[in-house]
Amino acid sequence: MSGLRIAVTGASGRMGRMLIEAVLGADDCELTAALDREGSPALGQDAGAFLGQATGVAISSDVKAGLSRADVLIDFTRPEGTMAHLALCAELGVRAVVGTTGFSEEQKSRIAELAQRSAVMMAPNMSIGVNVVLKLLQQAAQALSQGYDIEIVEAHHRHKVDAPSGTALKMGEVVADALGRDLKTCAVYGREGVTGERDPSTIGFATVRGGDIIGDHTVLFAGIGERIEISHKASSRATFAQGSLRAARFLGSRTTGLFDMNDVLGIA
Image (cartoon, rainbow, N blue to C red; front, side, top):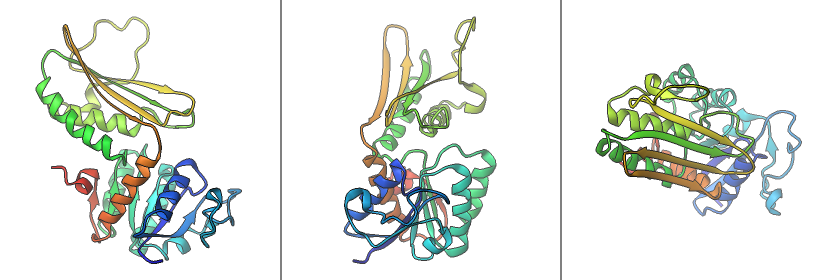
């Protein structure tokens, strides 16, 4: 089989396995590398073993060798690892789809620099539905700019290490931009004790962590006598995997540049 040659990082993790399954099921894609951290017990195993399939691709920690056989890297790991992977992508001319969250502003600036050498598509959430919701939030915030308090509630599984989620922060950025505000100065990330009345110019965040919740996000516009809730609930990581493949196909015809899911979906 031949097609878009894809390398997947975090191959033995929950998201990595979902990505591998999606690539193996796509007629126009080929899994050419499955990468994991040094010391992982999965090293040396066939990448499709968890599916009962023999792919001929062994899970490896040699990122440079794996990328040398790929057109596109799909990376859902941790910021430090992703930064190292992107540096190699820029060196080798490999495009990258990045679903990692929790980057610092300095790291984001570095990613923009690396994207000048090899194309990068980066989004806090690869779900097509979430990215449609972001567009709806922009419209809702503009229409509900007066008299409505805005709160963002997100819930994820117990293993997630950053909070609020990258998706929740992106939702906050979209809403703040639509209102002409700066999220850095109007966000409230926690409330405890006697906090006084709510400042109507703020955007509140609440975080839930527990069990195996894939990802739930709700933006609440609370007015007097009514409230509007715009929600997205993921029931499977398959939605992120399919969105990632769509992004990988989009990058197939790009050589440089930093893109997001709006570019992939053609949402102005």
